[in-house]
Image 1 (spheres, rainbow, N blue to C red):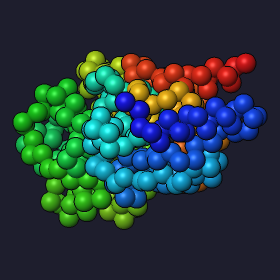
Image 2 (cartoon, helix red, strand yellow; image 1 turned 180 degrees about the horizontal axis):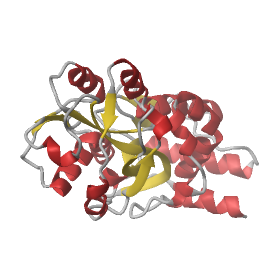
Image 3 (cartoon, one colour; image 1 turned 120 degrees about the vertical axis):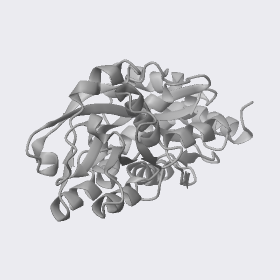
Length: 303
């Protein structure tokens, strides 16, 4: 059943369109499931909340601090969030009741060791202490896929540490490696490349096995210039989606997507990862279906 606030928003949108004005979502309550405070999801959510409040004449959306993608999906399903930033591998694991507003920015898999580490390949992490992301995070989900593909599930000492805890632990030798998924460059990694000395492991030998687990994984290269590397590193890239309940009204979904792309410059200022937000790849959310309201927006661009 749709909430009364959403129904009121639909009526307002229709009236505004008839009058020739822009969408009006006044009275609509929007809760955005983001991520950890200060992360890319959080920065983009804050900028998007400001933009939606200003452009769509609605109250500023509430930003929900979460553990990451699996947590965000859970909140959407439980009716505790209306919009969520979600990594594509998590979003497409079970698409029932979900829809995408758009594909947004891309994340790159990083497997990080100290520059002076004897570890030269992912296989050599056997028996080592490895940070796999905080509990219920998208990084943890991807880490487990990586461990499964490499045959190392149960063969490493897994530590549930997010990037902010993991890098200091790597610096002091408490752990041997960090698995991370984020933008290139990730500022906290760049800083420690300069001060501590870090190295990224190439996962060429695991790429095919990982791609076989999900259609959203693609092979990519982290260039030398990203972290002053000695050579390019082959890794995986995966997109992120803006996810909503499939039951969201078409008019509300269309208005939110329009607000997203109207705010692109603001999003880029908030986080460089938003440079990859573009209307052309934005429709590429398969196997998660685009919301009909979002599809209506993209089709209108072609008219």
